[in-house]
Image 1: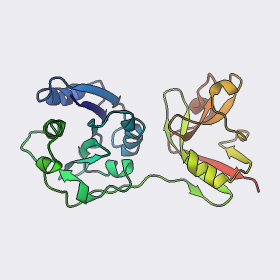
Image 2 (image 1 turned 90 degrees about the horizontal axis):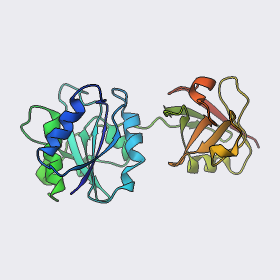
Image 3 (image 1 turned 90 degrees about the vertical axis):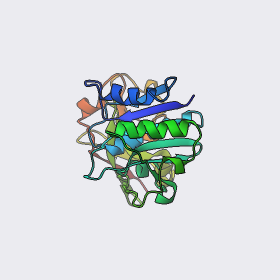
Image 4 (image 1 turned 180 degrees about the horizontal axis):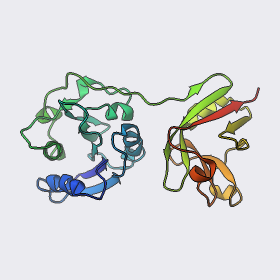
Length: 254
């Protein structure tokens, strides 16, 4: 029995998520679902990729990962399937998977073919095939035109990084598009100052909120090694006016 993860912009207010699950359960009644996130903003494929990026490798091989975000992206919508590291991925051909895997190419990606009334049926069809170990060729032919998207990357020089807030979590922590390896490579053991709005700069990085006093601002690398700014027992987004797509400056001292 495969584990099937679901990442979507379907929300919980309507019946859409239940419709997606019931379409799969019709074929695979013993399915074990793992809901990654269903409150992604409409069309936000960047955050959809980020959400799945942080969990898929934690699951056993054979797991199937469905992304259902920004499905109605063109007049000729296409849905695709591919495999990586023993895992299977299913979703729209709108660029979301090239955000998840920058080296993904058309030669390993297959178009989901079938006569269904909606894309839920296509997802369920592909899921049922892949769960039995069927080859991707049974899902459909190789796709001719894989849609490509690129991440919003930090802008940097030898002495500075200009980062973008790519997500604000439910605790109000602002997650930046800076991974630990990139930060340390650019830093080169130098002192630094992290500037945002009109606040005093942050000059150190901690590994836990407990390392600072209640109400103090903290910079730390989260469990997925992205730099984030928070406040111990507070909401950094509202208290520091930090919002998605805002910019943060990091200056390195020579």
